[in-house]
Image (tube, rainbow, N blue to C red):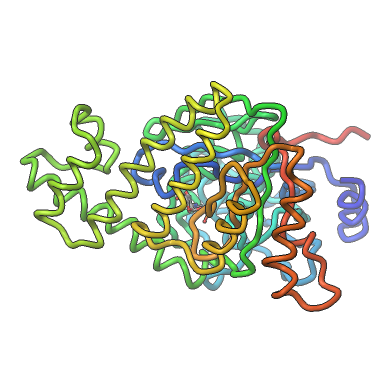
Length: 405
Ligand code: NG1
């Protein structure tokens, strides 16, 4: 944080007044369930996006990035901010600012000089994008002396991030804002509720990057949005086969028919819907069950049982939801062979990372095994696999601190 403050002082010729910091997240169970109104079980991680800032009297935001690959930009805070090209990093900042301006009544808004830095790996399925949205929101709220509740803010930002063009759910923003050190978070949606689930002491989480970028803002965006509309199509199918009023999402189906098992519902749908839509639905309904069971297993300290749910989740993401890929599948197989309790792709998929659950004592042999089987054959000589796989700690949620002289 010292380096960020000094960098700010040099660039802006004044001291920053606040530093906002927001963690990325790794999702243990519940993939592609959030936008279906069904639960997830992520962990906020000890990798953060940080923003040092000082306010300005006008509504201009001048935003620089400590990473020279991310060009500086400026814009005016308003309720209709022109986005940059798809995939531009500034769109995540603009998403947060526009979302807040739309949600709160103000005569005038205070912009600021901002400097962004961070260590959440980008395009890894670890939500660097939502961490940037959340940090931006906390920064802009601080400059404007606004203090919504975390729940209110998480709900607002889940919608606000759609500015970038993905029809995302609310997992990432909620995990970043509401995470708790040493805990996973069971999150339910519409309305947003969270419950912390303690992680056993002797457990370690390792992220392994597949070396395939999970570029959701660019190429994979359409594939992601297609999944969202396939799930809506499944709802239309259920309305017909069950002769039931319009369903907002598959979560509402589960609520309306609590006694029907996923297999029975999927069977019914298969008489009416496209086979791809049926498979998507099977993933979503069974994944929700894995979250319910997983939460109980984790609370009971049954790590073997929890790990089995993770492997099953991966198979379902791969076979029914079609969001895995050969590299992610290979990493999961290597993890299983190396004695991981559980492993699966994490985040939207289409590249990015796997999440691996291990006993602490198994971490070193596990890292050796993935380096030997996966990274060494792929990385150039002299490239350090340590930058591609990392042990993560469950950390606290986002915060914005005011710096005292
Ligand atoms: P990633 O792409 O891993 O940050 C996305 C969505 C989540 C959730 C997961 C899949 C956004 C901001 N994030 O996460 O809401 O749907 O995919 O479980 O759209």
